[in-house]
Amino acid sequence: MTTGTLRLATRGSDLALRQAADVRDEISTRRRDVELVEVETRGDRLDEDLITELGRTGAFVRALDEEVLSGEVDAAVHSLKDMPTEMPDGLVVAAVGERAPAGDALVTREGGDLADLPRGSVVGTSSLRRKAQVLAERPDLEVRPLRGNVDTRLQKLIAPDLQAEHEARVEAEADHKGDPGAREEDREYERTVEEWFDDLTEFQRAALEHELDHEYDAIVLAEAGLRRSDLFYRDEYEVERLDRADHVPAPGQGAVAVTASDPEVIETIRSAMDHEPTRVATSVERTVLAELGGGCIAPIGVNALVQGEHVSARVRVLSADGDTEVKANRDLPLRTYREAAAEFAASLREQGAAELIEAAKRAADTETAKRAEEGEDDDGAAGDDAAEAVEE
Image (cartoon, rainbow, N blue to C red):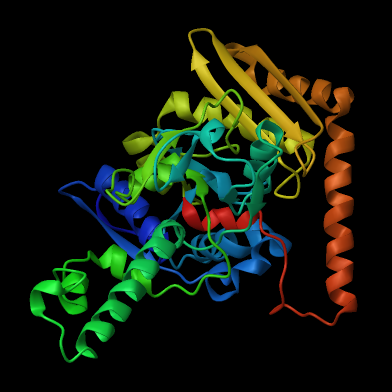
């Protein structure tokens, strides 16, 4: 396709639309317009608790790719970490754009890194991988599920302080008005509740509306999601990048991929935006994941970086509680990176990764059976790992 309008499918979340808009800008020309087509996926319709049971593919990816295969759209934009390692017949990854920062970030209200959190602090995350990695470093912390889009998770972090201040201001104003002898200069707060509220940002006002089951002292998110949502720098919280040597990202994290089926569309998109170092690095990561066979069930981190004639790969497979792990680093030859990545994964399986993954699968099967016995259907509750798909 050299001219005309190219139809690009995307989810309708704010982050997904931002990613799709970036792709549109990269492949648009004066002779070729690009139209974004919002597609509702099953994951968008479901309670987030169900996402793990379905798998990221079933929840977020499949609906967009079906639109491509049916000819309703020309291509689809995905966060690469949410995509299956096996593609449907007739569909290919046309391009992988240049990667954003691939690592995770710790967000706190006061600042500091993971080591600075007091014993017993509550850390929020919707990823089994992040949970296991946090507990491996700090087993004295409590990790609780935290779901929602990027802005929602951040608002849940800052909500307790804002809600407490609002309540205090309301009570102080009521007490002042209820005291017949109170003087205006004796008010506890200089501004009224209404004036204070008017000065809040939309982000802060939304935080006031959240109903919280518990408070979080910190949360862990993908750095790429924070940056793409323009939420990395804000006055309400502090962000600390986590060391990728210990907090190994999910395969494909930080990268955006475009799928297509028509050869002309594939070539058009590939020539416009494909970033070869990112494509190679993420191919290594996804090959390792496919060979390990953990999918979104087990806590698996895989990160690769092209360095000259080699691809430096780091893998970390953990138990759910972070107590047991298999990890390794290896420099793979660039010339045969796919074969070398498969061999690397095989060696990890022999070192004990296979047992950790099988244990994770058994735990997931047990939890699924338990819910079935309790009569929960597709609108019931489930695990929490793949809910991280909504954030990047």
